[in-house]
Length: 109
Image 1 (cartoon, rainbow, N blue to C red):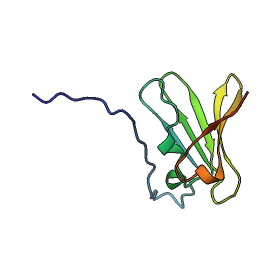
Image 2 (image 1 turned 120 degrees about the horizontal axis):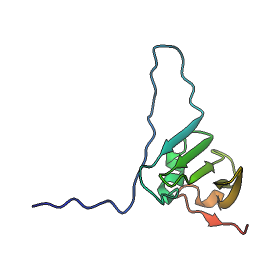
Image 3 (image 1 turned 90 degrees about the vertical axis):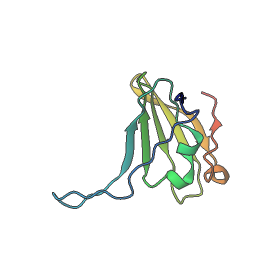
């Protein structure tokens, strides 16, 4: 009998295109949920190849909400935030030289 084992890392990919018969579609952000607890935004989720929009929001079953502002095509760091109460706390940056792989450097709060 083959036993199913959970993956060590989850992966989320946004659609390449959206077709809507009601009119033109303009996508500005990637906003999605993870159906498991303690799901922080992973390194692959921060990687440049997955950034097509100006903002990426992610939340999990514990109501942790994270935001990535990747600054696509700019020579400035991407910014990673976590929602705390009624505001966003900067928790890390993705240096320009690390954008390709999504390596985050933690910031002192």
